[in-house]
Length: 330
Image 1 (cartoon, rainbow, N blue to C red):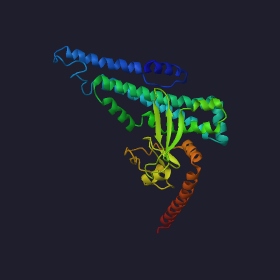
Image 2: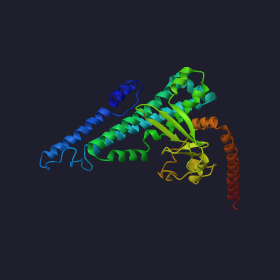
Image 3: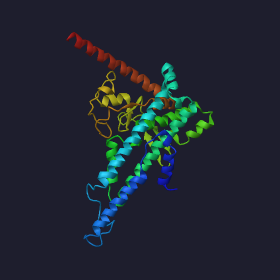
Image 4: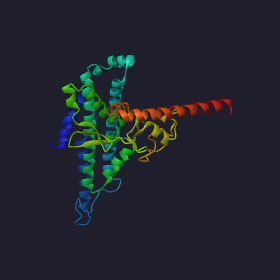
């Protein structure tokens, strides 16, 4: 079955949940209009031998492509990422909530009253993210094939800079960790185990990788090595560009103390790895991943916990000493 038909069938089954998607059929119709325009130009005086896929190419800022195709795709990608982030955040907040807050959320949302429904929603969200990522990739690949260009690839890079590439969403990493945590806590439940066959945490030469494979043999691999301290991320935080660091390393890279936190980082500060600006404002603390890693490597976790506790105490002491000196006018 072709992916386009498979995708349309998948999205039809999600209409009751009002999930936005990529209009593959509509975008393909838009692409067909552009080659027809080029063929019309070729028949009206351009050199013979320059066929549709030869010397004739889509002109810069073509009204069909730039005015309709890319703007439509950009709008759809933004809607998909926004919907995914919102639903994933609510799901994980409910799972990690405790006490009265969880009781209040439980009765405030009908979809979360059943534990099995909670698990299935997490499964559906990851599937939704990956299949939409494939749809975006395929339509941009088709654009480049038709136009003999790399503008589709350039658009993907632009989408990453605008933080609307769904695979770089920090909530995708959190959902994958959420899966594995539930698998370990429900090891005797076969129904739950079946949902997590494609998600795994592996250590290759002590380098941790979070993996998930779904649809079209596509596999998502997330490196869990902090590029600052070059060790397994501890107390992990993800910037809006999708790169994951230790919380303390991230604060240090943003010239912020542990006391002030990431909110005090300059809004224009760049990611230490990809150098993309403005990524600290949307930073997400990865609590599910934190739980997963603490269970998977307890000895390392305890060692880092003790070391960072000492550093946190030192920075807190220095902070309050400076505050007291400022107050006393010293």
